[in-house]
Image 1 (cartoon, rainbow, N blue to C red):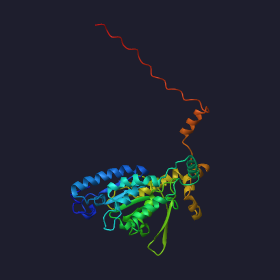
Image 2 (image 1 turned 180 degrees about the vertical axis):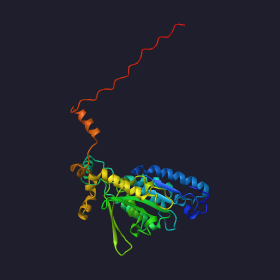
Image 3 (image 1 turned 90 degrees about the vertical axis):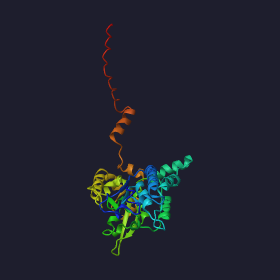
Image 4 (image 1 turned 30 degrees about the vertical axis):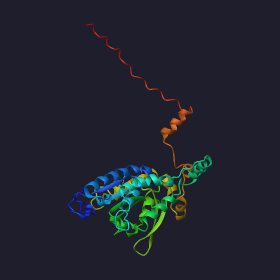
Length: 323
């Protein structure tokens, strides 16, 4: 980021249009989001040395994009407080993960509770996500996508349409239905299949009707959200079309998985929100890699063991000539 450009506040988009567009892209990765959170805290600290203690990450980037846990970080960086400044300081992000992760991903202690958790995992999502939902709604309130302090791009995957859904503040004029609550977008992009239930919500489509979303983790289509930025103003050659193409490729490889995770009827879609690993395995959708099957068969004597590699023949040492 160009700190001199931003000395007066605001994003680079508010400065000289000839300046380079600044883009922050945050990948998915679950609890490993603590890693980019730590990097961003360091970056913000260094920027504050240059431009004062009020400097925030959102002031320096024209576009912030994130998928899955990166989407959570994006929302937290771009959401405004009551004074129109970022709701979270970058230094608060890692603390958020450290403090809240044990409650978002509760671990059972006794052997009976562990058995119950294993059965629940087989028949439905491992976690109900209720604490994460309430946490995000409490912090983000009624703030919608158009209220973000800078442009944001957050991919998710809609199981009703079997395609990526990209929530972009650039698209709101032509697609008002995507002006969803930031809390709903964050919940949707981080709803990893078999870990959290798919997230259903509705928005106003701008024509007097509603648009329904059935979202799961955006990482199934665009774990690296940079491909979702390119067609936006200031982006590059790869954008939502590239992300959509990636989604089609993923669908072609995992079509059996999506047959369960994304059934066609509304009744089935409500049921697939609670899909677990046992349903996927029982119906043959999840198959181990042949390499792992062969390894297991050799272990049980069903296949001959692999021949050990021959050690290369070493030439005898050349005797030293007497001096």
